[in-house]
Amino acid sequence: MQATRSLSEYRKRSTLTATTVFLLPVFFFILIFIIYPIIDSFWLSLHEWNGITSGKAFLGLENWKTLLGDKIFFKAFLNNMIIVVLSIAIQLPIAMAIAFLLDTGGKKLNFLKMIYFLPMLMSSVAVGFLFKYTYDPQFGLISAVDTMLGGQGMVDVLGDPHRAIFGVIAVICWQFIPFYMVYFLAALSSLPVEIYEASIIDGASHSQYFWRVALPSMKGTIKSAAVLSLVGSLKYFDLIYVMTQGGPDGATELMATYMYKNAFTIGKMGYGATVASGMFIIITVISLVTLRVINGKEEA
Image 1 (tube, rainbow, N blue to C red):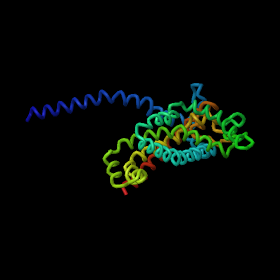
Image 2: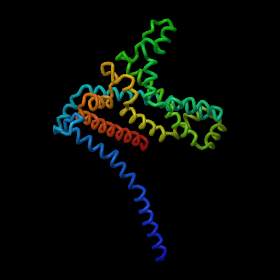
Image 3: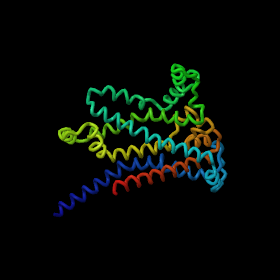
Image 4: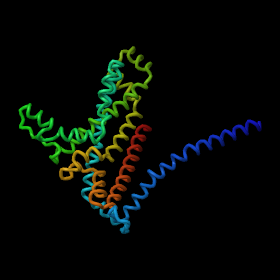
């Protein structure tokens, strides 16, 4: 009895030691590269600093008061929310449809899986430049197609304040639909084959199997995909900065691009840190509320 207890205590100590040894480096890097920058951003938001000189002037909450009255920031937040809504509404259904078609097609559609995933393999900067030239009013593909259809050409998508945000969203969807396609395809592939065979034997069509069997079984996957799309849309930066730099007239300005301009273009590092800290609070709150709502509906 005592030998068994000693063996159990030895195993517990060994597990604790191994866990500590392997997790300590992880915690160290999380502390250095995640927790410390967040705390430092909040501290920097209380100062005025140009990012070059060593001196920082303490302002207290002045930067935060400015942020609460900053119309450009709230316009950028609204643009982020437009991207959130349209990204979820466009990307997830299309990705789900493509994933289901590829899943039912079997191995003969493996080549299409690779083709559809190609946009995701390109960097956002490369995609931004590609579509910047595609949208060019003089030499771009959109203007060329408009001319072929009998129009006058010169379709200025990115230069029109009413079109720019939707032109950028179209590019975002083109790039990220493949990611969610693979995400949903993996979930569909993990469903037991016996369920599919039983539904077919019972006389269910492919569409009935999708709506009544596959889709309800993927609620957790869909929820995760929605949260990923939401968080990604709220902190989006690179593609939009390459294509429009937030223009024209702030029509595509996002919180991240506004933060970058203040911190690294204008040299207002303190106010840029305030915008970044505001982004952190907004993204955290919206994500937690979304998870709470989704989990609450599932429990109900």
